[in-house]
Length: 111
Image (cartoon, rainbow, N blue to C red; front, side, top):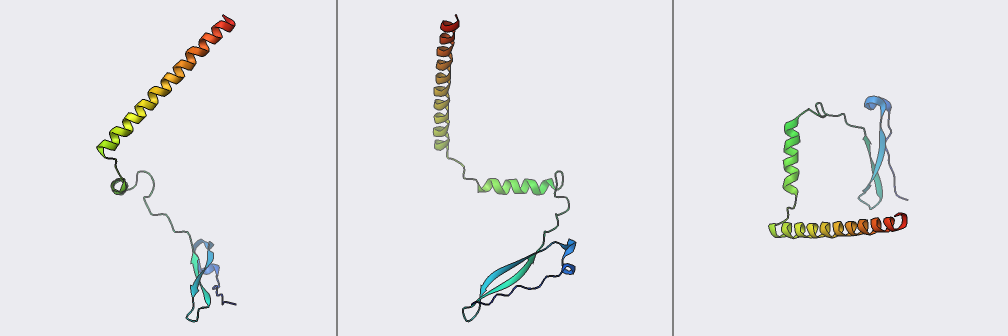
């Protein structure tokens, strides 16, 4: 049977008295599984992290994320645009045809 070790927890070591004891498995030199204990507490929110606080950081993060985006080439963009336009034209024709057909049917029935 492998050795398991989870440390003791006391509320006076934790701010606000909130804690979770988590046991993480680790390898012992002889191959036995041993656990290490870590107490996780919620971290306090940084000051000025809400809306209106630090807009410069927000802009830098946006630019950083936009650099990660894989942008389409001009050829891909033209292809996608044509596909969307053709699809929209087909859907408009389909809906218009159904509307016209149902309108004639309603006029015949109630006409």
